[in-house]
Image (tube, rainbow, N blue to C red; front, side, top):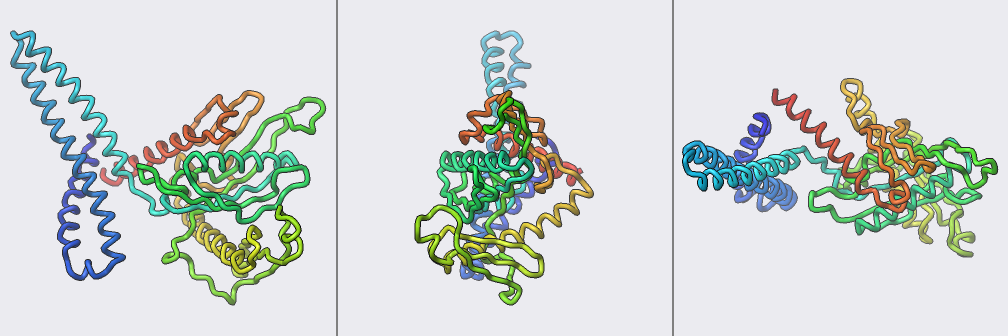
Length: 371
C-alpha cells in the first residue's frame, strides 16, 4: 500500500476513537441530526478500520511465510507449505489493498440522491428528436434493471416521434457501494452523438445528429437554494402530452421562470396544477443549484482538466455508431461493440468504467495532496 494511503488510514483510526467519544456525549445524543451524521461517519470509519486490521494481519502472515520459506531450505514439504501460504497471502493483500483504496475515495454526498434526467434534441432535426426518444428508452430500461422509480416531469414530443425535450425524475436505493441514482448517472451529462441511417433516408446515407443530456441531483430540502417568490413568474397552460380528453381541457401544466437567472422549469405530468407547481419548483431549484456547481467546476477546470470532464452539455462525451454497432466514450477511450444491448438499457459496463476512472482521478488527487 502506498504510504499516503496508509497515513490516511491511520488518521481514520484516530478519528474512529474520537467518534466513539462523541457519540456518547449528552449534547450529541440530544441533537438527532448530528447524531445521525456522526453515526454514518462512525459506520464508514469502522468498516475501514476492520479492513485495515485484516490487511495488516495478512501482511504479517505474508512476512512470516516468507521467513519460514527462507529457513526451511532443506525441508521440501515446509517450502511447499510456505509457498502456498505466500501465494494466498499475496492475493489477499492485493484484494484488501484495492478494496481499501476504493473505500478511501472521498464520497460526494449527492451520489445517493435522486436525480432529474433531462434530454434535449440538438442538431439533426427529426432524427435528433427520434434519438432523444431512444436515449429516454435506454435510461428507463437501465433504471428498471436497477430497481429505480421513474416519474415523467415534462415532455415536448416531436411530430414524427421522439422528443424535442423530456425531463424525468429517478429515485432508488444506493447499491452495496453506496452509489445511488445521481452517483451512477452523473457522468451522462454532455453531448451524445449518433451516426446511423435515418428511417426517412432513401439513399442509405449515414447521418450524424446529436442530443444533450443533463443529470441534476435533486436538492436536499435542508440544503436547497432559497428562492424568493417575488423573483418568480408562474404561467399555466394546457399540457401537450398524452392524457386523453382531460389533459386538453384544463390549464394544469405549470411553467416557472426564475427572473434573475432566466432559468425555466415546467411540469405537465399531473392533472393537479398544485402538484405540477411543486414538481416544477423542485426542478427549478435543481437547475439553479447546478448552475452554481457548473460555475465552480469551470473555475476548477481552468486549473486542472479532469479526465471525466466538467459535465457541461457542450462537451461531446459519446458517439453511438449504429452501422458498426459501436459505442465510444471519448473521455476514457472506452469502445464497446454491443450497441444494441446498450440501447436496451445494459449500461452497466459504461457506468462502471466511468466510476473507476473517477476513482483513479480522486486517488491521484489524494496522493498529490499527501506528497
